[in-house]
Image (cartoon, rainbow, N blue to C red; front, side):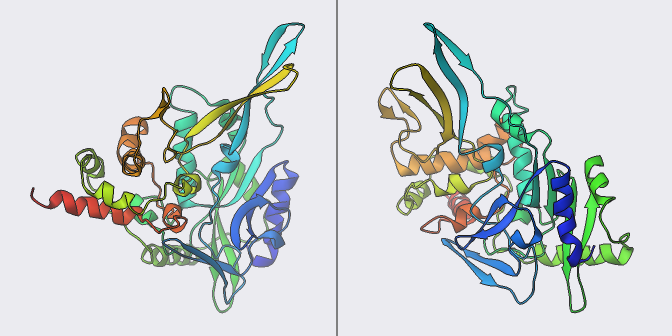
Length: 367
């Protein structure tokens, strides 16, 4: 499909009743917001990322998806930063507890990267497939339509190849597109991943992709895979972390860690939360709400007035060990998808790939 027709996709999704959400430029970052036209997309912008550094720059073309990922992940729509779990009303002296009504909407996410599709699949296991269905997540997830994007650029902190989550979308999408720009053309190659995706694809203008088109897609994916800004050796990482509990490296990384919680808030898979109860002044109504929390917060594991993990070293060890070791025991996968957000948005540039490598090196040094 040609670039001039891309807006038709957004219009079709809106006509199907979806709340269309996609990337847009806001406050010098690329974030996910409701969109209604192709002009809402970050046309001609790219992001330059490194440890503790992020900035937008103009590209020399008009690419619609020529960036990687910003500070916001799709979990903010499926697992919102704040949500109401129940409301309480005093009716003639009796307390009436009511769950919130399911929202009357269906999301269509446009521009979901392969690593982000993997993150959504991980949170599906956490919230839907682990023996208890989280009502808030399930209500937001129902009817979701995803338009994936095969990455034509790799970010400075990306390492999805190491985690086997990208740069090509392989599952979890209804439609996936590859943006192709060369000296003579700007077009998109689409593939359907579901019946719903095929129904939308059948309504889009364009022509059937050829073998040459798919060869071009494969070449773009190969170039992106070879341009990763970071890499992580995940061989035996679960056992490595389990046997490195007393490594001196935890204290070294803690000297830099601010325990600011940035890494967990930008992570597309982290799901720590806390609950808060509020009541009206006249005690006639109340509510229990949930908000994001972080295992880096001192009081997150507070018991009887005392934190279980008092030191930054203990909290960093907990985060990294959960992400790459105990997560496998709980959910049969790693908890990291290689998006690189935690590296980019750490104020002091702590790099998860470097920390794993450092722990591995220490573990190989004879005692």
